[in-house]
Length: 127
Image (tube, rainbow, N blue to C red; front, side, top):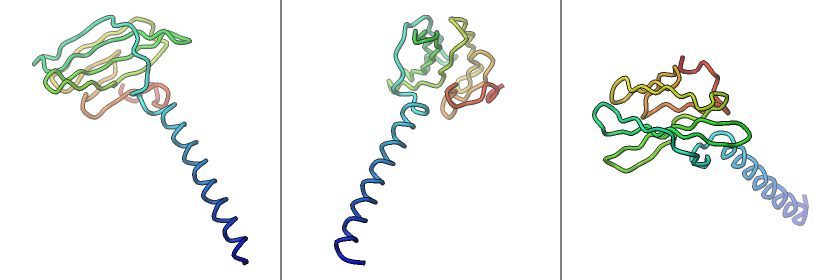
């Protein structure tokens, strides 16, 4: 191969890698990342038994009514979205089972490790 052809191939491979990276990042942020979800209207707050955590329930009006639940750590002032779904309207049943587990519309979740994102999770993941 000539030196000129080798340079062209390297540029093409580099450009292809950049395009692929952009596509992968777009897909990830569109479907998997829950930190970029809209805030919505706060409809309720439920404290954990030891009052270290608050489950904040939001209704988000997009094409459909969406339900979003954030967990706020009151000691560290950190917020994490653990639940995102639609077709549930503004019906949200939340019950703290203990200081680590919460029941959201029939789905038992560990607030430290679990998330439910209806865009990618099956409906019966936590049932």
